[in-house]
Image 1: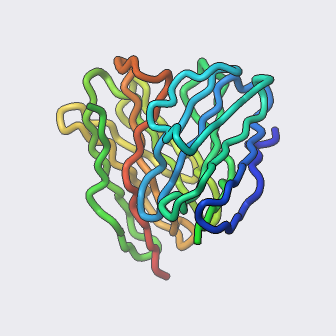
Image 2: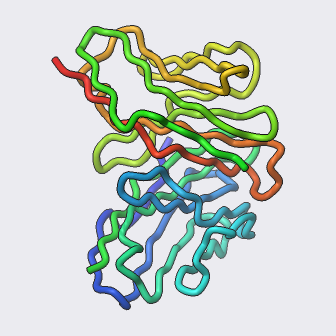
Length: 113
Length: 117
């Protein structure tokens, strides 16, 4: 079974630029999560989708971050404009919805200069 | 509020010796508890979980964890450490009573395990 796919794996941008990350969850998984992992910290949930609807985006900085999952499958996370403090690894995870274990992709490492 | 604490930034152990990585939690209800491992430049890999039932949970790669409700702990253990176990370990908790987000996980800050030959 294929795992969670993410791209790109690495991205370097300058502050105030925009960037987008892509995630393709495990096939059949209804729930999709985006986490931000700052160096030295544990992952922090940014947004959670159930199919193509948002369940929880309470920790998403909505003035600059946006995410969508239009067809209930893959998802994109966008940052516009980026700040230095956005430098982090962005992890995507998925699960079937009823089962408790979340499965994570390899992450996208973002460096904002 | 839900929270997870991993009191040790790093744990050092010699290969072949037993290892313990500590985790304590705070939730309002009965917790769902998880351990994940992260290797360099990789995502998080699921190791094991406790939902209900036997307090001793066995997981991948010979790891196990013991749920202790009175001490609100869920320590990760392995009888004999391998150099290849060296990685970053994260404990996470989900409070099923928390209605703010379906299946939301709260992660600890992580513990770096270093196994020396």
